[in-house]
Image 1 (spheres, rainbow, N blue to C red):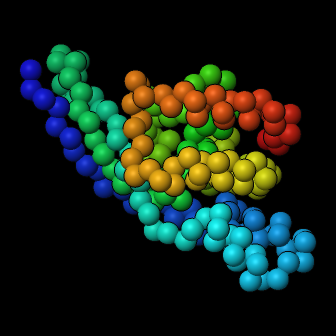
Image 2: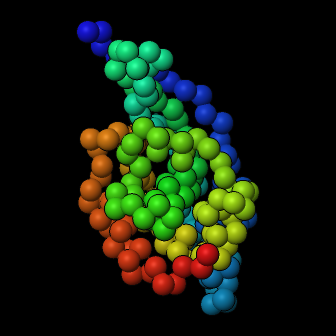
Image 3: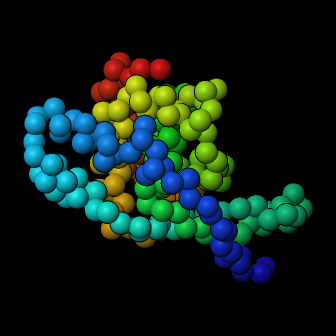
Length: 186
């Protein structure tokens, strides 16, 4: 049997950091302005929480080969995504899997979960987790963003593989959603 070949996909950034509705700097800035803090302090808090960076994270995933029905062979693929896009896509995924699909493993780990990272439904009103959902749930988005940023700030690769479920992280986010589920606005 031949060893699977690792291939890389090109990825065009969604530039989520440029979207006001889900721009963590704007959300945090609006919250901090309510306390009448000087601009320089607000900037320092933002910089401390979210270092301005163009860091990318590699997503490593498994894909069925073209002849999978006969060979049952898969290959591994990798694509790079800006950290900000990764975090927003990760939030969309875990919220979709928890609130809409009622799944217990909400961390992306299956082959089809890769589509949560590569497809953008932020402007689609038929999609449950979109810009208007994040607008209605800004604080939840900000808390999740901070948590996920903290979980992945020192990582350069995410393994979206069925045998790598990040169970501690999964439990943490399930517990958080259990606490806030009555506060979520759909």
